[in-house]
Structure formats: structure tokens, C-alpha cells
Image 1 (spheres, rainbow, N blue to C red):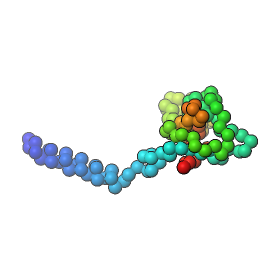
Image 2: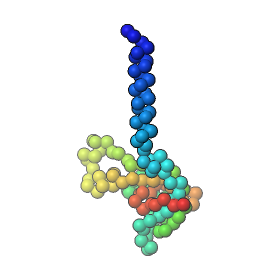
Image 3: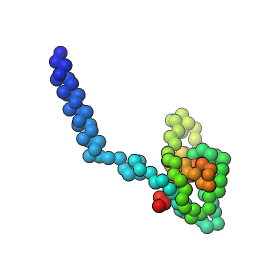
Image 4: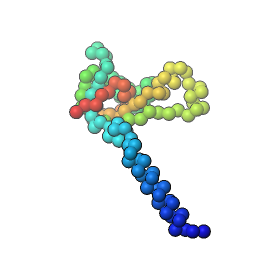
Length: 122
């Protein structure tokens, strides 16, 4: 067995993988999410519900007014139910399960809001 050739081959593969990663970086949103969010798409006579967990049926922690700015961003996620759970979900539950949620800080309280009602804020 020629060990130096194996090490050389592994080094070439590692270098190739690194080169591919540098040529195809992740989208900016995945690497550098906004520090702050602004509320968008909420009617003037409505509010954005901040919830305790990333699900539309969870407990409401706060009502955020429309056009609020400066919500501190704490990260976003898209929950993925298991296949067993997916098979027992209603159509409404499945639609809700596909939503992206972002954790924000609003007036010192932290909770989750649907990302479709957020835009990056400066």
C-alpha cells in the first residue's frame, strides 16, 4: 500500500472541495441575515402577532403595530415536520408548516413572527 499517494489524493480532494465552495458561496440571506427588521404587509387597522413558538396556532406574546421598525433579528427558520406528522396534518396545517418564521426582539420581549411580514430595516 502506497500511503503517500493516498494522502496526496486526499489533499487534492480537499483542495477541490474548498475551491468549489469558494466559487459557489451561499446566498447572502443565509450567511448575513438582517440585524433589524421592519413590519410590512400588515393593514393599518391590524397587528402582527408575535408568538411563543414558530406556529400560527401558538400563544400570542405581543401585538406589533403595522410599519414598526427596528425589530432586532435573532434568526429565522422553516420548521420541517416529520413525514409521519405530515401525513396526519390538515391542508391548513400543511400550508402553515411551510412558512418561514423569524425570532425577533420587540420592546424587550422575544418571540416568533411569520417572515412574510418582515423586510430588512437599516
